[in-house]
Image 1 (cartoon, rainbow, N blue to C red):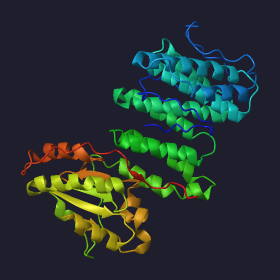
Image 2 (tube, rainbow, N blue to C red; image 1 turned 60 degrees about the vertical axis):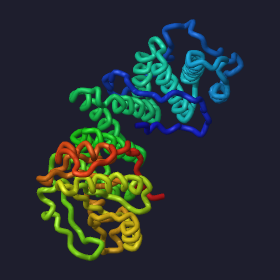
Image 3 (tube, helix red, strand yellow; image 1 turned 120 degrees about the vertical axis):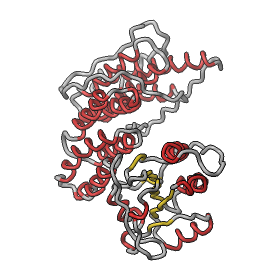
Image 4 (tube, helix red, strand yellow; image 1 turned 120 degrees about the horizontal axis):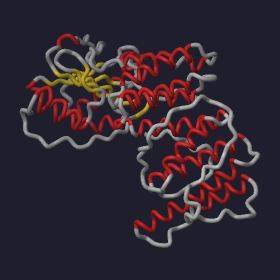
Length: 413
């Protein structure tokens, strides 16, 4: 997961290996005023590009850093490329440190802090001695900075790191990550950026067994936005409340109701005793269409053993859903709103459960309780084997499903 947004339009194009955040979480201090201090690598003799002596202003140093991305490694071997990357990021760190000791604007402080944190993040991943501890120190320095905008950068890096190692954390450490985020989003005036971060974190946690922590984050966030003076933020509250309901679903019953495409009333009670995939989808959703062959294959393999599917269409027009269902031979029922104003993202069940991206495939067991919030690709097949045993029909293993979703817009322009 990555919700780091570049704080300016400056290019910083260096091709890098993917970063896996494995930093050991450090405790979050109280937000206090502090003067920025250089974060220097222990090995002062480590190879780097000298910062030009005539680069005496922040703008000149930013221009120098921008030019680093155009430098090519001298060799082509993996070792030579990694050495080059280390050299570049040591140089970025030195230049960013120099900027942060100057009299600079808030925007420049944000950008320099971002460069420093990003440089240390990559140096840590590249195995630079001392980089992990310095990365933690740089995050703490950003969190303690007197400029709220710099606090934001530090918190986003800190939270992303905590989420990156989520599966390695124990319960207390997971709660510490959430406590940090709650402290961050509930201070000051609520805004759309924090809201987007909260929703990204909630969806991330919900798909990784962290529904309880996600709901706790929402329970702390919702009152802040409910009491906001901004009407645009207030209108998001029902969606947040819906997401909170969705986060409470694992292990509990799900409400499914509405009218089918043919106009008849849907009877959820008739599905008890079956394993059911509740699938929020739309014909305009590419990832939804990509998943249909997998669901069709598993439907054929497991329908005789008690597996069924209930589609919930977020299409705007009935004909769109009907035509696609006929073309693909989808045999299961589809719920579709009779009310024109309750279609698309306003579909009543999508609103009730705060659906923010599709496909959203929720698997329900024979007792009507939710067992998976992201039953796509091989996950769906594994869950069906657990609940229903071996398939009736022979079939190939399900391919890895794309994790991409079509997202619901949060705030209108």
